[in-house]
Amino acid sequence: MKPLLLVLILFAFAPQTNAETMSVNLTPTIEYPVEQLEPVQKTLFSELLNSVTQLGDRKAACENARVITPKQLHSLNITPQQRGIVLSYFYIHQKRECEAEEYGEFARLVAANLAVQKQSGVLRFVNALNTVSSSVYFDYVETELEFNQLPESVRNKTYQAEFLQHPFSLMHTLEQFE
Amino acid sequence: MNLSPAFLVAGFIVNMSTASATPDYQNVLNQLPLPPNELTTLLHDLALHGLEQHAMAELIKGYNRLHNKRIECANVATVLKRSQLDSLKMDVEYYTTVLFYVDGLNKNQCESAEFGAFTRTVAINYVMHKSPRELKLVKAMNVLSSGRYANFIEFEAEFNALPETVKTATLKADFLRDNFNLFQSLEQVHGHE
Image 1 (cartoon, rainbow over the protein chains, first blue to last red):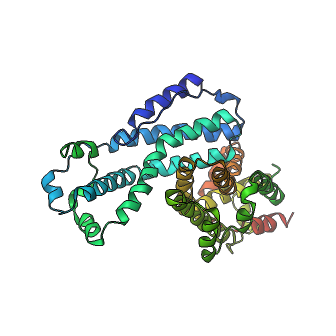
Image 2 (image 1 turned 45 degrees about the vertical axis):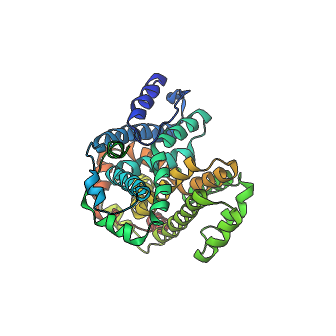
Image 3 (image 1 turned 135 degrees about the vertical axis):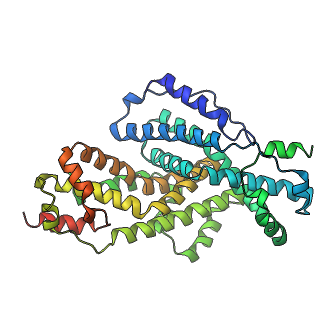
């Protein structure tokens, strides 16, 4: 694995990640001569690179342009503030469900790499990959806490709403209310 | 192959020494896995708030679940017999490599759900915490929990270097797919030599 390839992998992956909810500064990029790693470290690092590619592909496949209409949301009879929380919660929830298998493998390899890698450059690289890929889950924790503070009647209605149970475009849905 | 119980113990000590570079949280690490009723006290002592507190609580709960499961997986009663290994028609010198690798696969499977949940919280905590103090705790818990996968990769590499006939016979053997007690099995298998 050449350093140039690492850079390409990082940039190829970044635009597919959380495009609707966040931006991540990936500069300066991290270059590392993988061939200098010891066998175990090299194996784990290579597996992580394969995993991040698969996760990126999966994230792209999970993108969905479906727009939830104002009429559908009106049927929930909730306030505009509650609407924002509900849409954010279900948007990330559906994303998480869609990429669960690939993200699980990625997280396993992030943890293993952060446990066994010794070179500071590699650790920085792994941390950068993790920041890009796991930030949506960081957002999810925050959104989930907000969602759980909504009245139970609101939460029950949203769980019963079929149109919230599948992936959708948060950005295009919210644009309708601007 | 130089693998033995002493090898694993040495590996654990190496891991512990890495974790000991976390003086602020040494007491925490010495207490884990924590009884559930002590979790509240610990989180209070850590003095975290909001999302950081929530994420750390999830991490510690996940750590507890993983290590309780790991103990359960290791305490399996099944012990392999020498005659079972002999039925595979391979050289005795391969037995230890085969057992360590297959045991690694079985243990991976046994703790898969708990390890998966734990590593998800590790990944999120690495993103969430900015303070070196909390990051050291996250790292220490991760090293203690994920370090065994470095050992597994070594076992796997040694297994992959074995003759094809040995690998094929190993992977076809049903009795090796069920979780077994590694050290008691090693003792049983090599006790006849």
